[in-house]
Image (cartoon, rainbow, N blue to C red; front, side, top):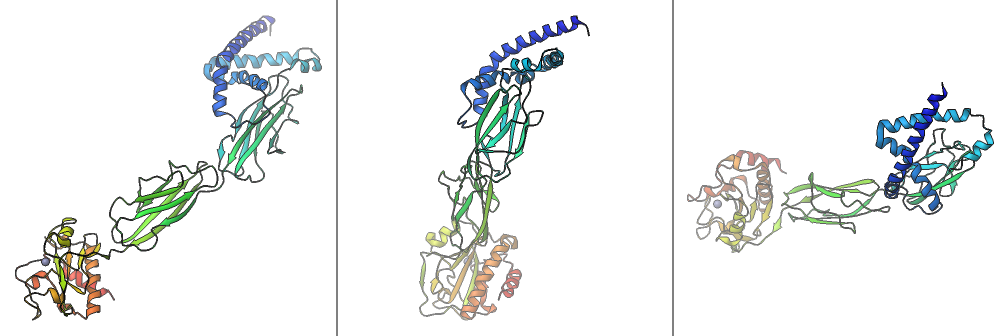
Length: 442
Ligand SMILES: [Zn+2]
């Protein structure tokens, strides 16, 4: 290679260096700001102001290369060409070492915020612009103990911490030397939270009669704290809108009436380190709520002998209001489409459901009220399709219990239409399915 070529190369390198220095000045402050926001959290000792000032501009070749793309790479390539030229110069090794007055540079360290791993991998990048790193001396310390791992010839330190770390803060130091004995150190710390959030005290747990229960759960975290934005509660597969409070309390009334039966709840909790835990439970809603309808009267010593089924020819909640006293009517039970059962009048009291009526010679004072039990079924009564399976099951269950309790045979179970010519309900009632269901019950 001729001397002209190399002098040109050197010139370009010098230009490149000038550009680098200028870029360094321009980007120095943003880079430091970047490092301040993304870099070591809680740097607690060591790294002097001087070494910070020192390291910031030296990050520039990388930033520069990224920012200026091809040109940056070109400059770096030329710089790489130049270096072997230097080493081939007939300078004694000692004086070359003296020429390296710059400390090694330490960048890209991790983990530096929060980790859910109790044995994280510590990572650091170390390099030297001068004679090169002293790989035998350069090392990493965690909580005062030296890690056995070495920095690779490429300046990479990567080692999984051999022993499990406890929850809390841990302190790392990278100590780097170059072959000219220049020394630098970077300290940083990170927080370990390797434990999952805890979920306790969930309710309701036992069977309940409320159709709109309040779901309650207590959640807490021993480490860095709950991620309140992610933590939530699900009922029957639906996420509830409520949030866990900063004190870890979740409390929300279910948004809709729950049907009779089992309901499934899950609390899904995350902490800020990403640890996750879940608690599932279920509870049963039993709908035998004792309500008291306005219109009811004494049985006057009579026992129930007949069971009468009705359909409301309406829907909830209009039906319910009517049966509770909105009109001069009532029944012992109201069974909703969902199968939900509401008790309106106790068995020992006569409900006002039969009106002027009689059945198989039974009927005191021209009405069956004193000697019967009545169920109102939420239904438009237009056909069998207006009665749900859940309703048939619920009605069958009530009827079976009454039959056993009062010794009432199937023959004394009828519809409103069976006790008076004035009425046609429960129209369309699937008696066949109903009886199959009743007979399947013990
Ligand atoms: Zn009726």
